[in-house]
Length: 280
Length: 351
Image (cartoon, rainbow over all chains, first blue to last red; front, side, top):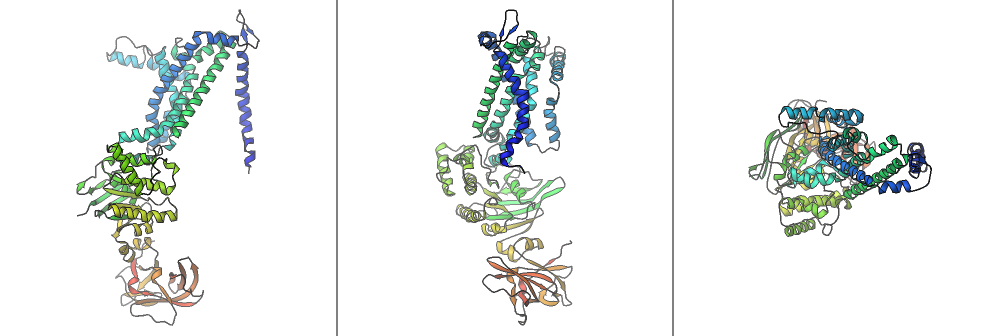
């Protein structure tokens, strides 16, 4: 038997692992942020705030932040609107295919982002499924631009975060007891009124949790904005990659990365507070 | 004219029959218990009444109009759930107000009726609390008030006391019964607890395997069980294997008894243990008493009575004596007697 006092010992392996693969690299990143870039583009070892100051003085950083927030907001909203009814159905159904349906719902999670993006290109491209269909029906004459722009990125991102949001919703539905809906109906509330007065209020904590998760995942997504954006979509994640690899400007990349990390942590805290407040 | 009328209700789940041809008439203001073991179909029957399950066959009428196909929210039935099903995100007062709000009752009127409802279940002043801040008994009362303020045509109680501890259950039993009586509200009460059924209801419908085995007053059910199942399920009973003698009388433990045996088939004689008396072996049987002889195996003191286990030629039986009387010593030779009319022969079931 393990005494309660010794239980923290069990955390040691995981703690060391996190320290090695996460905390240490993050510290290195932080250190890089204090370095400067010389006129030739070479990195100069330093302990200065010049890089950070320059980065935040640049209007582009602000624009990137707005782009990221806006994209995450739209993708999360779309994904939530689609995931909520789906999760509610999965949570409720007595179908013997329930397990299978749940696996199908989260299956996209198991597919590489790159493969998924090419799938979307085949569906949304100028000669893709949607455009071909609409053109053959005579609804449009020229193809709609659905990829290599914000539309394509939003669609692709919404789809990629849905499985995570479905899982979060299913986990958060704990409080949702079918008897409560039956009670509501027995008291004279129609199914629609019951949804509005009982189901929705009781699923708010789950919705907040899923929204927070979806938002954070959208903010940190790189492959989807990069590939479906076709070089025309600029967000924090793509810019960090650009600075770190193409420009090999590590100090700026580090500053932006730490900044994004801070934003994400703030958002997580806010969504947790919201979820807790709603659970009250 | 009955107020609530169930006719030929049936519900199947695949090949399993949950409720099979249940018919029941309840008068206005009457309180009827659906009593039976779990899985007997009593809750399914109640849920069909509330519109939470659609029956496959049969009709439900309330006050002359058929409601079989009416959706749950248009039925005006007060349903008290086993788990209470209080809305955790609403205050106690809002819980009670829920049904009134759905009916479009004015704000001032709602406030008045909610206060009245809470007073009825003795919870005045707790309207501002959240359900989880209340004890189990208080939650139960909120659920009752919530179901009562809508002035339901029928009050449906689903195992409503089974989550309370024994003492609270006693209190709530009397409380619900007196509220039910004072409001004159027609009530259907589902329970597996016979004490609840016997004390809270005017009539009892004993259910078994989706059917009603017997309907009657508490006394009917207890004294004159219609089937072997009812005799076994309600109260305690000795089931004594018996045979038929040449005169068509019951032959029990090697002695002919003044009780007519059923004309054919194997049967057991059912006798309530508290109807039996222990007498000295020397005492003869009267003309209308059953008498068997045996030996005391052991006595168990149970508080309000003493159980005496007697073994004889035909097996064992249990006699209940009021506590305070002296139980015979273990191993003592003794006779057991009871009134012939307290013996109920029922055909033996195939094992």
